[in-house]
Length: 178
Image (tube, rainbow, N blue to C red):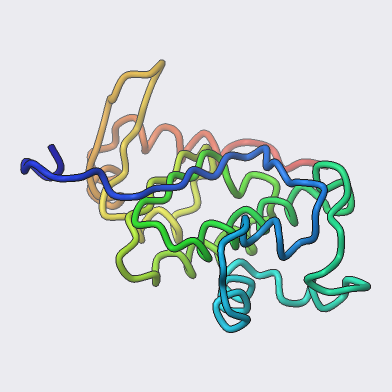
């Protein structure tokens, strides 16, 4: 059942924090042997924040990524996976710490781009408690040892002064890395 009705589960894709890339070209890693036109590929690169990275590559989209993407940083690999997910246009995107290797600003830009995708349900598993990002979600679910302890809109949960408020306070009180 979907939304309380008999129906098909929407097509989905999962993005994990550890991205696997094939020893093929960047374009082949994005398209996964499905036909996409250049405009579709460029739109996915733009939304994933990869346009400048690709422009700096010696052979652009035809650059070989090398064994498991060794040519790219962790953050670049995560953005490649994101571009792949956007390109394939699934209805449901599950991101499991998918922006963990990105700085806060870049992660925020990517989540902003995703929040503007039409017909996309985004489920994001994260330890990053950025209010600007969390406010965009329809619902925030707080887990503790695998159990749901709170759920609701971000501001509503903060007002309750429960588990989410404690996590936000802990993050604010944490010392900055040296």
